[in-house]
Image 1 (cartoon, each protein chain N blue to C red):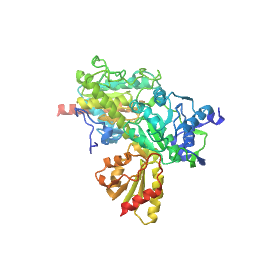
Image 2 (image 1 turned 135 degrees about the vertical axis):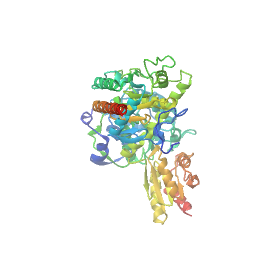
Image 3 (image 1 turned 60 degrees about the vertical axis):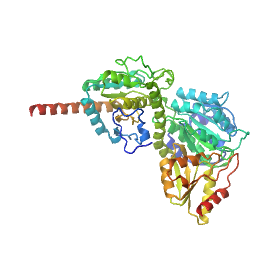
Image 4 (image 1 turned 90 degrees about the horizontal axis):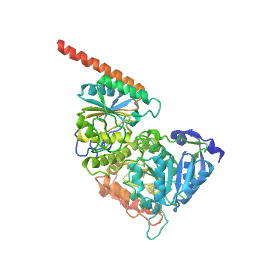
Length: 202
Length: 384
């Protein structure tokens, strides 16, 4: 049953969390993003992503098959930009190479799987993650499972319309969006360093 | 190969339905299916005959001969047909088929499979009664069996709707946030075998080709990674996380149905249409029962009765919120239907608090027609 004012918050939410779309959360339009179920401008969304990543203890990026194989023009460049973003954030990268259920034999230090993403998150104590290059159906499926059983903060960078089941999502993510996000994260990092420095001096 | 088929210009749905010049044609519903598919840029169509659908897929076969459809054949039965279009769609092409009545039930296993596999197949269900005793006559009972398959369900009032809804269905089904099969339903015989004037765009335009690379699941073409093609079953594992994964999968299918509403509003102009929304008595229905109700409502208004009409265009997703508002305002709601169980009345009753206002009548079945006088009598009774 639809709840009023449902928020897409980090879990553990419940035994079986609902799909955010069934709770009245709608996907953003062009130029917008979603922060915890609330429609926001792209800039605010990027700024929030930057804060969440930089404040995390163990941020980890999960690139999926659409980013791991050079199946069309621009994918290699996008993957390189993700690596650059990971370097700026200081994030680890754990790939999602395919969608076969691998329970209980998955090596959680080497890969993540949309059917049991909690195993990789628990094992590595990941508190913030990025889904990118994951086919939308599998992304939503995995994002719900993460919300259900872990406290990991989820960010979905989607090449299509975005993901309501992520805590934060950006849509139409292309090379320009990636470059812009890297700049936003660098700027936020600079601000955080200044603030820390200010505190020390003060 | 028709010369036109080789020179059709690819256009967007908006242009095809709203901007291009339309011409009037005096055709049957089956011919309307053919005209829609002629402009739908379909890759694969698979047929199996069943009355009253047979003519429509026969005409689609003529389109194959003319070069408008890339591949076409007759399957071994309806289950085979629905499995074949599933394979085609999973392989990354635009697929179409049609069936009706017992054919629908024979193929039943495949409809939730289509939805669960996120296949944007369009199927026209040209409805008829379910045996036994044997009937080939109009009846919408099969729709009640399909309500919870995960498919989207559009219900055409007439051949014009059937034409427009089939073309819209391809575009809505293929939106990356939807990717669900769509059944476009029309009442057999009343629509399929009745000739009426419908307006259709010129034949030298067609929808842009299907793009499988935006699919929320990988296409099975050995080009899109990962090349593993099956939607991996969880049934092989018995543990909490496998069950939770399956649950999350099902939730995602139903979430996609919610997301389709935005696209339905854009391309179909909403899930329903309302006439005289502040009336005390509302007639709420779908399919050809809307046409009979329209006639009855017109005559009731001439008698000075305060009555309105709601045409439900999409049964899935169902316009729950709009129906709640309508029921709240009205004193009584009549639900005329062409089936014995009254599945539409049940659906409306289940979605509102004041369900005592819902009158599941008039109801006819077994091939009976529904004269507008029958509805008018119910309106008069409700007004007393």
